[in-house]
Image 1 (cartoon, rainbow, N blue to C red):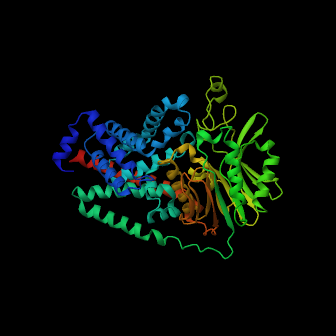
Image 2 (cartoon, helix red, strand yellow):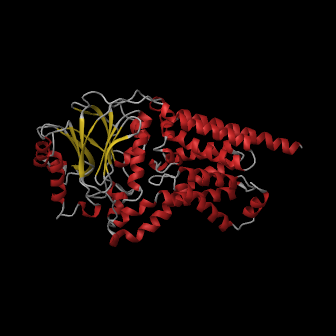
Image 3 (tube, one colour):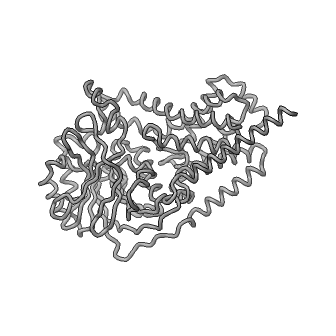
Length: 504
């Protein structure tokens, strides 16, 4: 960084420095869907990296990390206000507090990463390793929330295919490395930065060649995606429930019979325990095809968010209970106590929330093979797929993205579904209440979709799976080990530099 600019930044007051970093973080957030301005993310992160290399103490650098992280999540997670606006009179006042508090809370991971990078020496190696490891930590601590990871900026680009090798953490490391290289290229170390940027360009160009295309098999089964487009504030309106159900029945019975019909999460407005006649009605509309539907069920005093496979005779041939629930959405910690004060999860229709199912499991779908069911939030976590007892033939995700509004949330959720397919080399059937419903192939490409905010149905052929990817076999461990090794090398290098300075 030119000495004059560095001196001016270092001379700024603490709040002005924080504001500058928050703006850079906000600009970096525009790389997430639906904006996809990934070059802007790299430029903003490069500038932030340059600021982090100035003469700060580890504590000062950490506060800059918190500011940048908060700005990043304020933009990337702006959709978090949407659930509070479904019932504005009751919850609307909470929306701005929820966005700010969540963004600042997640910004703590950036704070930790920047502090650790500074402690390790503050160079590019330390930056990449520390922030990648804190992104990994964000995905697991307190059940995890890996939404809007830095590496998600590459979804929809050729770089996305590298997730088949090292998953989302490799994409994070590549993003951070590219930002550091860009900074070095413009800050005087042109050889080092230029070599790194050439390597990034080569990785971008090589992306499409990482996996061979998966051809559509002859006679591939036809899957019908059913999207009712029930707005969340209307979904449980007693005057409209029957209309939404009848709409799905009409879409199911239209055209030629498919090989499978899929409805979205909680699409059936009755409990599974009392749904005999309703399921028979669905089976009749499906005309001999099995149907996948989302609904709720009760067991004793416990309620579950359930996916059910309906046989042609109207019976339930298999079911799956969602096991990875949304904190504060589908359940509340200490929910029994909080329920006494009227506090319940947004998505829970009964009691103080849902109960967790036993975990990932496979469902055999006649004529299509083994499916791994995922309900909404579960598709955000690679480990929910890695935890399956065996490799499935395809992924099956049903969701109700009406909670996420229409700006960014549904598109980010769809983007993460595409990434899951790339990571595992598996096609995915994804059906959403308000969209985007899509059929995704094993390379993450959308081969058919129903747009957001539209009601309709779509028949799409189900492509075959690709061979298991390196990530499917090994998971995050190789990248985690590499980042720990890089962190150790950065620490050793920093120690030698300090010793040399002391001996000089």
